[in-house]
Amino acid sequence: MAAALQVLPCLLRAPSRPFLWGPPVARMTSGMALAEQARQLFDSAVGAVQPGPMLQRTLSLDPSGKQLKVRDRTFQLQENLYLVGFGKAVLGMAAAADELLGQHLVQGVISVPKGIRAAVELAGKQEMLLKPHSHIQVFEGAEDNLPDRDALRAAQAIQQLAERLTADDLLLVLISGGGSALLPAPIPPVTLEEKQTLTKLLAARGATIQELNTIRKALSQLKGGGLAQAAYPAQVVSLILSDVIGDPLEVIASGPTVASTHSVQDCLHILNHYGLRAALPRSVKTVLSRADSDPHGPHTCGHVLNVIIGSNSLALAEAQRQAEVLGYHAMVLSTAMQGDVRRVAQFYGLLARVAAACLTSSTAERPLEEEAKLHQLAAELQLPDLQLEEALEAVAKAKGPVCLLAGGEPTVQLQGSGKGGRNQELALRVGAELGKQPLGPVDVLFLSGGTDGQDGPTKVAGAWVMSDLVSQASAENLDFATFLDNNDSYTFFCSFQGGTHLLHTGLTGTNVMDVHLLVFHPQ
Image 1 (tube, helix red, strand yellow):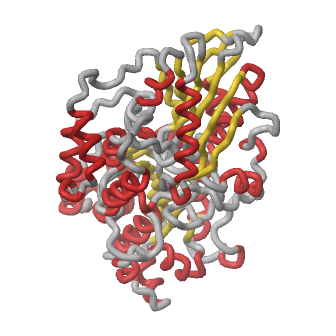
Image 2 (cartoon, rainbow, N blue to C red):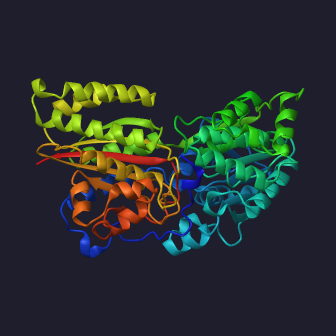
Image 3 (cartoon, rainbow, N blue to C red):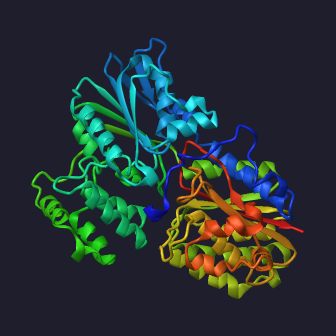
């Protein structure tokens, strides 16, 4: 997703009571019961990847307190434990690690989103706050998920800590989504502003997170294995909360503890593809030319143990389980939804029409032409783990309500100057697709929400729609097409039915990309 549409959940409110949809006075409108169930499923997905429980499942001390066990590996503790971290979920991860290992911790430095401690305190999530006498120093920065001077200072402190370590030391690295922006360390003579400008240009032209991170790594002292190299010869254990499709270690937070597999030619190919190579600053050209002729080659990271402790697939598995408890026939469609948000919306719209027909018609009446179009579009999206045929067969056999779940991170190419995020834009576009033709005697709901709790520069996680969105919006004199042309989905949903279709979660303290729900309930 374009970085310009990704910001941190640093100003959100998280109520201590059960989550609600929109203002209380509007909760009983048509379709709200189905929406409440969809919300329960979203909450269960987010709950499965909370920082504290994930750390507790991964780390343990032996009874003597002298050995740290990380999964099946054991490390000796003798006043040699250090900690660094960076990412949207790292404050909660650090608090959990400090609770378990604080007596052994010599020093720690973490880089977290600006304002997150105040937001956590306001939300009443004391378990995500460090104790007053913690040895972990906290830096806040990267406002609006963009590298800034505060994040640069944090990165410098992390680098200095790592470079002081010896072969007897153990460095625990906590990494989550948003880590790239919170660990900016451009290679001189590239400045932070030059690197940030290039990243913004790439994001605005629709570059994927993988492409953005390839460029970031090439211009960074700490990404692409740079942090692991700085910490050598100390042992390094990285605990990673994945926010990237497929959980590739080298991509998450730009892989600070993973040797980079990308070359300068990969960077140039990306820059050429988005028409930016000719406009590169001289400093960037200098760094890329140096890397191309580096006789030492890429860093190696044999002293590092990288462990994925949470992911989108884990979140979806819990939502699927909860859906089955609620009486749905539930299936995970994909954990790799990606590509342009327009195409993804077309996919969900076609899927809804085909699945609704399968659910309410006999086999002989299935819409074969639309099924063929759906398979063609799926092939064009190139979703590696898509279970489309299995999902359609399951829907055809279902005797009641169905819930199809997916996760990932579509991209938005900015054209207008409106306000929104990829989840709200996807929901609005899917709503438009659902309204193109009648779906038969079945209620259909689509929800898209960011697990970090904030979608773009807004205070909501996403939105939900039903198949009557187009007609209902027309009745309120809202032209959804105009809002979409201006990338103004948040303004649309604020106006539509009093804002009841917005997904308010408040601070979640985690981040494993987005969750999509497509719910069918026969009338």
